[in-house]
Structure formats: structure tokens, C-alpha cells
Image (cartoon, rainbow, N blue to C red; front, side, top):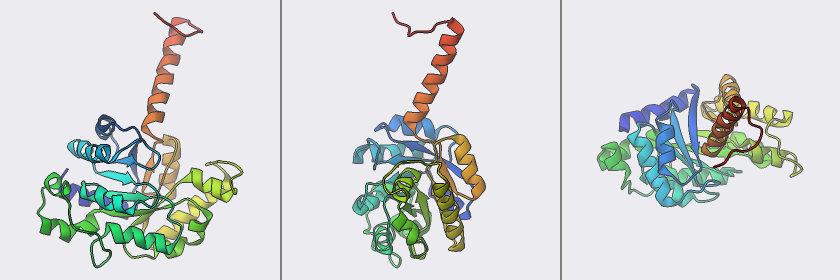
Length: 268
């Protein structure tokens, strides 16, 4: 992964053109490597709900880079300190959950952008050799080559959306439809496909465009990702690695059992 490619992908997101990211929840750099070698535009390593440790995040970023793809990291709630470390490891961007206010957005910028935008401490120990850059080259390009993405997944975040998007240094937003639906329905249900969630998704991308920022989202299927791309979302998922493994296994097992004329489970 070269610094030019990192910068190019960050600018691609800012352009609003649709991209698709491989979402990796398993604590396996091999999963990041395998998916990065498919036709995804990037890899996202999920530390919030995934099984990752700091070590597997660092390794996953490196494996994605070996495959020529940039990696993003979704950090844990309020873990802005690790947001800085993920960028030091060579991540192209950070997705921060539960950004519900301007104060949350400013904290994200403080930890992910160098002055004058933020207060990020300098120490890109893995990023420099991985990207082939000097410290001076990195400091000159990092604020543009890396992205800070605030998650919009509550009614409070929707209410504060324009103010969050107005924060300088916030490059884009990421909609978490499950948590958003829970918040919109006051905990009564989780329904990513509800009309209220769809209306919120349309509102988010419209407001992001108005502020010159990009919108991204977690989507469950290829069809859903395509629909989001048509709405103007710059990045969407195809669920996650565990789901893809399950879907693939179920499809092949169904084909195998059907072809063999079997109804029950096989065995030795």
C-alpha cells in the first residue's frame, strides 16, 4: 500500500462515488487478507462488536496493505485514544461509534487530525514504513489522506446532524441502521428496513452532501449496498465476514444435499 493509494482512496470517498468495504469481525488477519484480495475497495476492521485486539488490528491493517487495499478501523465507543493508534498503525480512517453531539465530534477530530484541525500526537510507527514515507511527508499529507467518520445511530445524532457535519475535520458520517432503529423506536424493536430508518438514511446523505461531506452505512446484502449507492452513499458493507461464511456454507450445503437427494445431515 503506497501513500498515493491511501490518499487516492480518501479522496474517492470524499467524491461520493460508491465504494464497497469488506467488514471483518473475526480476530484473524487472514480474513482481512482474503477479503482484501477480492474486489472490495477497502477493508474495515471492527473492534466495537468484532473480536479484535490491538494486535489483530495492527496485523489486519498490514495484511490489507499487502493485498493493496486501505483499511479502516471501527473503534470502541469513546475510545478516541485508540483511534490515534489505529492511524499510527497505518489505517486510512477511523469510524467512531455513538457520536451524538458536537462535543463528541470535536473529540474525534482532536484525536485523529494534526494541528490546525486537531491535536493528534505524532508517532506513526507502523504507518511510515508501511507507506514508505518520511515523518515530514506524513505530517504534510495525513489530515487529507486519513478520514474521521462519525457514526450516526441515535435520535440525538440525527437531531445534531447538521452541527456534527459542520465540525471541521469530520470527513464523513456512517449510519448504523440497527442501533438507529432501536433509538427511533425507543428500544421496542430492531428493524433496519423500517420506513423511519429509510427516511433517516435519505436525510443523512442529503445533509452530508449539503455540507460537502460523504455518507457511509452498514448494509446487510449486496442488493442493499447497491440501493444505498444509488441514494448517494459513498461506502457500504456487504454485512460481515461471519455472515459471508455462513451464507456460503449454507448455499453449498443446500446444493450438495439437494444433488445427493439427502434430507438429513451427513456424517462419517
